[in-house]
Image (cartoon, one colour):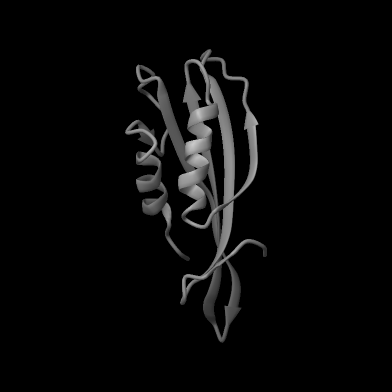
Length: 119
């Protein structure tokens, strides 16, 4: 297993300081980002040793008026980590906030850190 959660968090902090890995409680800010590691699993073993790990993240962007600018900024900082965007959609949110949900994934060679975008 490989851990990139700290890197994702630090990257998102460059977009806004209102970043959380649990359900956002502070809606006073105009921009809130929630991130969640949805999957982190081994995809290749060799000689009983983990070789490649698959990770998938969901990033939710909340804003009072528009999520577009923040979503573009999120995409840039997360892509720089090697994660590939696999989906992006607007979500109907009962809070009245604009809500965009973006998913990213990558496969990483555990020993070398090389990133692969397909499994």
